[in-house]
Image (cartoon, rainbow, N blue to C red; front, top):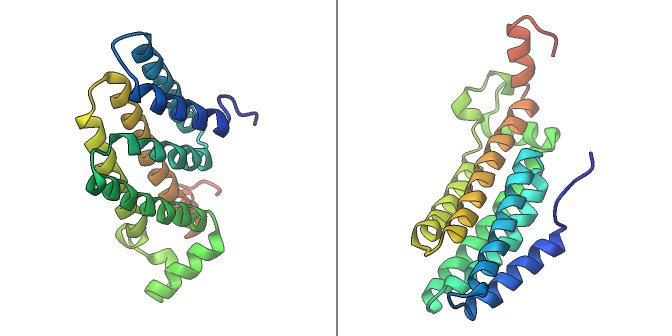
Length: 192
């Protein structure tokens, strides 16, 4: 499937440009340019969600989080922002592992030691991934609530929406690896 939209370098360039503009911003054309760059990146997150391109969402998020440094007013705030960056690596690792059926099955077999097809929905839930995504969502909410203009709010909200969809897709990968989708189809009388 042919991908549309900006390249990752173009996304990085837009955010870099937005950062530069924000530092010099006045209520002029610069403000409009700043907003335009953020709206463009917000649309890229929406496109990636629409196309179910979750690998791209992770790449976009990695680039976007570097932009958050402009919101740090002191060293403590910068440290808090950088602490959340570490969560991103855990999310990426969980996503990659969730796409590998053999890794998922082995991980759940090690955890529960019984037939993994008989796990309850709560046992199938990847609580680690959920915890990491929720940490990122709280982090992005703080920015969305604390920002001054609509472009910034939309930028952080688009990122949140993409991460929510990533979490849903991840759990579907887990369920597929554990045979839940096939079991549901079989129970409904369909061929998996």
